[in-house]
Figure 1: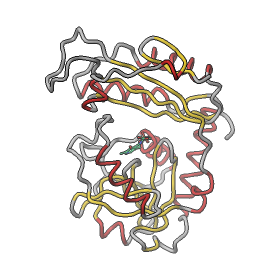
Figure 2: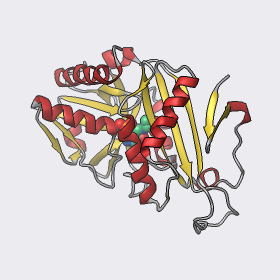
Figure 3: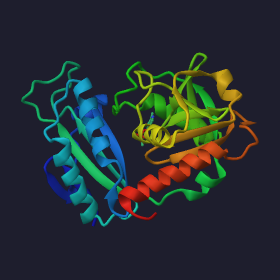
Figure 4: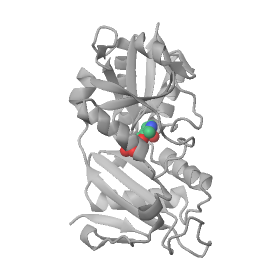
Length: 284
Ligand code: PDD
Protein backbone atom coordinates (compact mmCIF):
# COMPACT_ATOMS: atom_id res chain seq x y z
CA UNK A 1 0.00 0.00 0.00
CA UNK A 2 1.36 3.40 -0.97
CA UNK A 3 -0.21 6.36 0.75
CA UNK A 4 -0.61 9.77 -0.85
CA UNK A 5 -2.13 13.00 0.40
CA UNK A 6 -4.88 14.75 -1.48
CA UNK A 7 -6.08 17.95 0.13
CA UNK A 8 -6.61 17.09 3.79
CA UNK A 9 -6.82 13.32 3.34
CA UNK A 10 -4.36 10.44 3.33
CA UNK A 11 -5.45 7.67 0.97
CA UNK A 12 -4.20 4.79 -1.11
CA UNK A 13 -2.51 5.97 -4.30
CA UNK A 14 -4.96 4.08 -6.52
CA UNK A 15 -7.85 6.03 -4.96
CA UNK A 16 -6.33 9.46 -5.78
CA UNK A 17 -7.97 11.27 -8.72
CA UNK A 18 -7.30 14.43 -10.72
CA UNK A 19 -10.23 16.40 -12.10
CA UNK A 20 -9.88 17.12 -15.84
CA UNK A 21 -10.43 20.81 -15.12
CA UNK A 22 -7.87 21.05 -12.36
CA UNK A 23 -5.86 24.17 -13.25
CA UNK A 24 -2.60 22.39 -12.57
CA UNK A 25 -3.51 19.71 -15.07
CA UNK A 26 -4.83 22.15 -17.70
CA UNK A 27 -2.56 25.18 -17.33
CA UNK A 28 0.34 24.15 -15.10
CA UNK A 29 -1.17 26.77 -12.80
CA UNK A 30 0.51 25.81 -9.56
CA UNK A 31 3.72 25.43 -7.58
CA UNK A 32 5.68 22.48 -6.20
CA UNK A 33 8.59 21.34 -4.06
CA UNK A 34 10.80 18.28 -3.82
CA UNK A 35 12.40 17.53 -0.45
CA UNK A 36 15.10 14.92 0.11
CA UNK A 37 14.62 12.35 2.85
CA UNK A 38 17.56 10.62 4.56
CA UNK A 39 17.02 8.11 7.35
CA UNK A 40 13.34 9.00 7.38
CA UNK A 41 14.10 12.67 8.09
CA UNK A 42 13.60 15.62 5.75
CA UNK A 43 16.74 17.57 4.90
CA UNK A 44 16.21 21.37 4.86
CA UNK A 45 12.45 20.71 4.97
CA UNK A 46 11.48 24.07 6.40
CA UNK A 47 13.57 25.97 3.83
CA UNK A 48 11.72 24.17 1.02
CA UNK A 49 8.31 24.81 2.55
CA UNK A 50 9.07 28.50 3.00
CA UNK A 51 10.08 28.70 -0.66
CA UNK A 52 6.83 26.93 -1.57
CA UNK A 53 4.92 29.67 0.24
CA UNK A 54 6.96 32.34 -1.55
CA UNK A 55 6.38 30.70 -4.96
CA UNK A 56 2.65 30.63 -4.22
CA UNK A 57 2.63 34.29 -3.20
CA UNK A 58 4.45 35.22 -6.42
CA UNK A 59 1.58 33.75 -8.43
CA UNK A 60 -1.08 35.27 -6.13
CA UNK A 61 -2.07 31.94 -4.66
CA UNK A 62 -2.85 31.52 -0.97
CA UNK A 63 -1.88 28.20 0.59
CA UNK A 64 -4.33 26.71 3.08
CA UNK A 65 -1.50 25.42 5.32
CA UNK A 66 1.44 27.14 6.99
CA UNK A 67 4.96 25.75 6.39
CA UNK A 68 4.85 24.35 9.96
CA UNK A 69 1.56 22.51 9.29
CA UNK A 70 2.89 21.18 5.99
CA UNK A 71 6.08 19.95 7.62
CA UNK A 72 4.02 17.94 10.12
CA UNK A 73 1.85 16.47 7.33
CA UNK A 74 4.92 15.47 5.33
CA UNK A 75 6.48 13.83 8.40
CA UNK A 76 3.28 11.84 8.76
CA UNK A 77 3.39 10.69 5.12
CA UNK A 78 7.07 9.71 5.27
CA UNK A 79 6.37 7.63 8.37
CA UNK A 80 3.27 5.98 6.90
CA UNK A 81 5.14 5.01 3.72
CA UNK A 82 8.21 3.89 5.70
CA UNK A 83 10.56 5.99 3.57
CA UNK A 84 14.16 5.69 4.65
CA UNK A 85 16.05 7.34 1.76
CA UNK A 86 13.96 9.06 -0.86
CA UNK A 87 11.99 12.15 -1.71
CA UNK A 88 8.73 13.77 -0.86
CA UNK A 89 6.98 15.68 -3.63
CA UNK A 90 4.15 18.15 -3.07
CA UNK A 91 2.22 20.53 -5.24
CA UNK A 92 -0.59 23.06 -4.96
CA UNK A 93 -2.68 24.07 -7.94
CA UNK A 94 -5.18 26.90 -8.20
CA UNK A 95 -7.99 24.36 -7.91
CA UNK A 96 -10.81 23.11 -10.07
CA UNK A 97 -12.97 25.48 -12.11
CA UNK A 98 -14.38 25.78 -15.66
CA UNK A 99 -11.46 26.43 -18.03
CA UNK A 100 -10.75 30.15 -18.14
CA UNK A 101 -7.39 31.96 -18.26
CA UNK A 102 -8.65 34.35 -15.58
CA UNK A 103 -8.10 33.17 -11.99
CA UNK A 104 -11.17 31.72 -10.29
CA UNK A 105 -12.40 33.55 -7.18
CA UNK A 106 -11.05 33.00 -3.68
CA UNK A 107 -13.94 30.60 -3.02
CA UNK A 108 -12.25 27.99 -5.25
CA UNK A 109 -9.98 25.90 -3.03
CA UNK A 110 -6.43 25.01 -4.10
CA UNK A 111 -5.72 21.34 -4.85
CA UNK A 112 -2.97 19.84 -2.74
CA UNK A 113 -1.22 16.59 -3.61
CA UNK A 114 1.79 14.96 -1.94
CA UNK A 115 3.50 11.61 -2.31
CA UNK A 116 6.81 9.97 -1.45
CA UNK A 117 9.35 7.94 -3.39
CA UNK A 118 12.08 5.65 -2.20
CA UNK A 119 15.28 6.63 -4.04
CA UNK A 120 18.82 5.71 -3.01
CA UNK A 121 21.65 8.26 -3.22
CA UNK A 122 23.42 8.02 -6.58
CA UNK A 123 26.89 7.67 -5.16
CA UNK A 124 28.67 6.46 -8.29
CA UNK A 125 28.08 9.54 -10.50
CA UNK A 126 28.90 11.74 -7.52
CA UNK A 127 32.32 10.09 -7.39
CA UNK A 128 33.04 9.83 -11.09
CA UNK A 129 31.33 12.97 -12.34
CA UNK A 130 28.84 13.37 -15.16
CA UNK A 131 28.63 15.01 -18.57
CA UNK A 132 26.47 17.95 -19.63
CA UNK A 133 25.33 19.42 -22.90
CA UNK A 134 24.76 23.12 -23.58
CA UNK A 135 21.32 24.38 -24.51
CA UNK A 136 19.77 27.78 -25.09
CA UNK A 137 17.60 28.77 -22.11
CA UNK A 138 14.21 29.29 -23.75
CA UNK A 139 12.24 29.48 -20.50
CA UNK A 140 10.20 32.42 -19.27
CA UNK A 141 11.55 35.28 -17.14
CA UNK A 142 10.27 34.10 -13.76
CA UNK A 143 12.49 31.07 -13.22
CA UNK A 144 12.66 32.07 -9.53
CA UNK A 145 9.15 30.64 -9.14
CA UNK A 146 9.09 26.87 -8.67
CA UNK A 147 6.08 26.52 -10.93
CA UNK A 148 4.58 23.40 -12.48
CA UNK A 149 5.38 24.75 -15.96
CA UNK A 150 8.52 22.77 -16.75
CA UNK A 151 8.28 22.30 -20.51
CA UNK A 152 11.40 24.37 -21.24
CA UNK A 153 13.31 22.34 -18.64
CA UNK A 154 11.97 19.06 -20.02
CA UNK A 155 12.98 19.84 -23.60
CA UNK A 156 16.53 20.57 -22.46
CA UNK A 157 16.78 17.57 -20.14
CA UNK A 158 15.47 15.34 -22.94
CA UNK A 159 18.20 16.63 -25.27
CA UNK A 160 20.76 15.85 -22.54
CA UNK A 161 19.35 12.34 -22.08
CA UNK A 162 19.49 11.71 -25.83
CA UNK A 163 23.19 12.63 -25.69
CA UNK A 164 23.63 10.24 -22.72
CA UNK A 165 24.31 13.21 -20.48
CA UNK A 166 23.07 13.95 -17.01
CA UNK A 167 22.32 17.64 -17.35
CA UNK A 168 21.77 20.44 -19.84
CA UNK A 169 23.57 23.64 -18.90
CA UNK A 170 21.33 26.51 -19.97
CA UNK A 171 22.49 29.86 -21.32
CA UNK A 172 20.72 33.02 -22.41
CA UNK A 173 22.94 34.13 -25.24
CA UNK A 174 26.46 34.27 -23.78
CA UNK A 175 25.32 34.05 -20.15
CA UNK A 176 25.03 30.76 -18.29
CA UNK A 177 21.94 30.64 -16.07
CA UNK A 178 21.45 27.20 -14.47
CA UNK A 179 20.74 23.57 -15.36
CA UNK A 180 17.51 21.98 -16.54
CA UNK A 181 16.97 20.54 -13.06
CA UNK A 182 19.82 21.90 -10.94
CA UNK A 183 21.94 24.99 -10.33
CA UNK A 184 25.32 25.27 -12.03
CA UNK A 185 28.54 26.62 -10.53
CA UNK A 186 32.07 26.89 -11.83
CA UNK A 187 35.39 27.09 -10.00
CA UNK A 188 38.19 29.32 -11.27
CA UNK A 189 41.46 29.76 -9.35
CA UNK A 190 39.83 28.42 -6.19
CA UNK A 191 36.79 30.74 -6.35
CA UNK A 192 33.28 29.34 -6.77
CA UNK A 193 31.14 31.37 -9.19
CA UNK A 194 27.40 30.86 -9.42
CA UNK A 195 24.61 32.94 -10.98
CA UNK A 196 23.07 35.49 -8.63
CA UNK A 197 19.62 34.68 -7.26
CA UNK A 198 17.35 36.67 -9.56
CA UNK A 199 14.47 35.97 -11.95
CA UNK A 200 16.69 33.94 -14.30
CA UNK A 201 17.29 31.02 -11.93
CA UNK A 202 15.61 29.02 -9.22
CA UNK A 203 17.40 29.93 -5.99
CA UNK A 204 18.12 26.33 -5.05
CA UNK A 205 17.94 25.33 -1.41
CA UNK A 206 21.04 23.21 -2.07
CA UNK A 207 22.71 26.28 -3.62
CA UNK A 208 21.82 28.37 -0.54
CA UNK A 209 23.06 25.66 1.84
CA UNK A 210 26.26 25.36 -0.18
CA UNK A 211 26.90 29.13 0.01
CA UNK A 212 26.24 29.05 3.77
CA UNK A 213 28.86 26.30 4.05
CA UNK A 214 31.28 28.42 1.98
CA UNK A 215 30.73 31.38 4.29
CA UNK A 216 31.35 29.27 7.40
CA UNK A 217 34.41 27.58 5.95
CA UNK A 218 35.86 30.74 4.33
CA UNK A 219 35.69 29.19 0.85
CA UNK A 220 35.67 32.14 -1.57
CA UNK A 221 32.63 32.53 -3.83
CA UNK A 222 31.01 35.08 -6.11
CA UNK A 223 27.31 35.28 -6.92
CA UNK A 224 27.32 36.68 -10.44
CA UNK A 225 26.46 35.72 -13.97
CA UNK A 226 29.30 34.01 -15.84
CA UNK A 227 29.78 33.55 -19.55
CA UNK A 228 30.04 30.53 -21.83
CA UNK A 229 33.74 31.40 -22.25
CA UNK A 230 34.25 31.31 -18.49
CA UNK A 231 32.44 27.98 -18.40
CA UNK A 232 34.67 26.48 -21.04
CA UNK A 233 37.86 27.69 -19.32
CA UNK A 234 36.70 26.77 -15.79
CA UNK A 235 38.90 24.54 -13.59
CA UNK A 236 35.81 22.77 -12.23
CA UNK A 237 32.09 22.69 -12.94
CA UNK A 238 29.41 21.23 -10.70
CA UNK A 239 25.67 20.94 -10.48
CA UNK A 240 23.70 21.19 -7.24
CA UNK A 241 20.17 20.29 -6.29
CA UNK A 242 17.93 18.33 -3.97
CA UNK A 243 18.13 15.11 -5.94
CA UNK A 244 21.73 15.50 -7.14
CA UNK A 245 23.37 17.01 -4.02
CA UNK A 246 26.77 18.32 -5.25
CA UNK A 247 27.52 16.63 -8.58
CA UNK A 248 30.83 17.10 -10.43
CA UNK A 249 30.45 17.85 -14.15
CA UNK A 250 33.57 16.53 -15.85
CA UNK A 251 32.60 17.05 -19.49
CA UNK A 252 30.69 19.90 -21.12
CA UNK A 253 29.57 19.74 -24.75
CA UNK A 254 31.98 16.86 -25.44
CA UNK A 255 35.04 18.63 -23.97
CA UNK A 256 36.68 17.67 -20.65
CA UNK A 257 36.50 20.12 -17.76
CA UNK A 258 39.99 20.66 -16.30
CA UNK A 259 41.71 17.28 -16.27
CA UNK A 260 38.40 15.48 -16.82
CA UNK A 261 38.09 14.36 -13.20
CA UNK A 262 36.13 15.83 -10.26
CA UNK A 263 38.11 18.79 -8.92
CA UNK A 264 39.36 19.41 -5.38
CA UNK A 265 36.96 22.27 -4.54
CA UNK A 266 33.98 20.20 -5.70
CA UNK A 267 35.23 17.25 -3.63
CA UNK A 268 35.66 19.46 -0.58
CA UNK A 269 32.12 20.83 -1.00
CA UNK A 270 30.72 17.34 -1.42
CA UNK A 271 32.30 16.26 1.85
CA UNK A 272 31.07 19.36 3.71
CA UNK A 273 27.60 18.97 2.24
CA UNK A 274 27.47 15.32 3.30
CA UNK A 275 28.55 16.34 6.80
CA UNK A 276 25.68 18.86 6.90
CA UNK A 277 23.18 16.17 5.83
CA UNK A 278 24.54 13.88 8.54
CA UNK A 279 24.32 16.65 11.14
CA UNK A 280 20.60 17.04 10.35
CA UNK A 281 19.58 13.49 9.44
CA UNK A 282 22.16 11.06 10.82
CA UNK A 283 24.73 8.95 9.02
CA UNK A 284 24.23 8.31 5.32
N1 PDD B 1 14.80 20.57 -9.20
N2 PDD B 1 17.13 24.77 -10.82
C1 PDD B 1 16.12 24.07 -11.34
C2 PDD B 1 15.60 24.45 -12.67
C3 PDD B 1 15.57 22.98 -10.64
O1 PDD B 1 14.55 22.29 -11.16
C4 PDD B 1 16.12 22.64 -9.36
C5 PDD B 1 15.57 21.49 -8.55
C6 PDD B 1 17.19 23.40 -8.87
C7 PDD B 1 17.83 23.12 -7.53
O2 PDD B 1 17.00 23.50 -6.49
P1 PDD B 1 17.04 22.78 -5.07
O3 PDD B 1 18.43 22.80 -4.62
O4 PDD B 1 16.15 23.60 -4.21
O5 PDD B 1 16.53 21.37 -5.28
C8 PDD B 1 17.65 24.46 -9.62
C9 PDD B 1 13.92 19.68 -8.46
C10 PDD B 1 14.62 18.78 -7.53
C11 PDD B 1 13.01 18.94 -9.44
O6 PDD B 1 12.30 19.63 -10.17
O7 PDD B 1 12.97 17.70 -9.43
